[in-house]
Image (cartoon, rainbow, N blue to C red; front, side, top):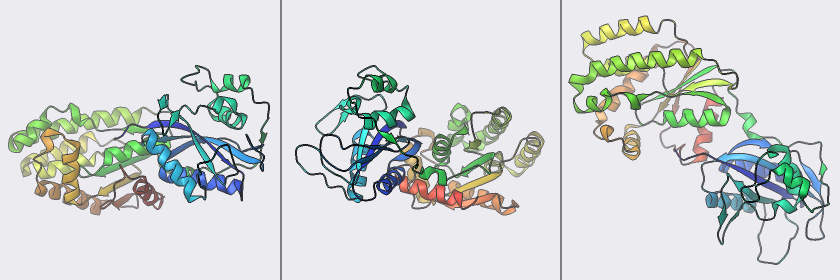
Length: 377
């Protein structure tokens, strides 16, 4: 998964319904760029550098997996969609929307297309005042001063007027408040780890990831399944039990809920496929004894992906020991999950068909998955 980067943006408008323009820009940023962490109050300010109508301005902090120039391109596309036409002319002018990339983490960039940090922000109170509201202690990577310090030292004498009306964060429409513990499950290569990680980052959840990389039997299993199936499944049984016991039992006051990329039932599904009948009978008994007191997720989500895409994803992530996984093995695992789901009762088990979706590279697809999860609330 691409690394997550924190960004700070400045928005302004002085044409048409300026407040609505700002809201539409915020919505566009959420839909196309990333998760919005904070929105500043809206300020009314005088036009800066030219004679014109008053502006409404705000700032926001967000996270994105886009590179810096790709972020700029996305911002320009949002401006264009909202009626902004950038013209090659000297000076400043009225505009329905203006979105400036102020900071991209601590990056220092100077190209023909992009300069970071924004070179004029320390001279403009219409940027500094709302920025101070959400990032007062953030330190300018070039000037080595916090936003609070830059605001105190700015030569701009114009004082922006804080407005009482607030913009809405579109992310607030997505809530997981009714769940304490969510398990994201799926076949090998379905993207469950990626989805669980993205949700944990966007919605302040404690993340529980399976420690498969530490299992010494896994590469050996793919070379000789008959020999290593039982020790592999037993090692997974013990490790998953210990991890869930530790992680679920350690409540984090600073997180809103827990999300895991596996559930204890996963052990039974894979064991059913890989073990002999006698081995599985013993394994099932041990599983029942060990997991009797372990908390179960109050929302169980299964990501269904077609086999062809699973094989593509497995090849793409490049784990050498997985490259010879057969199509029939993936089909058997999928059948195991679906049979287990059929036997579960209640409305806390949901299947999301992600065939044709790419929620890693395409934010619109990620939001479709979030929409599907919200329909389950």
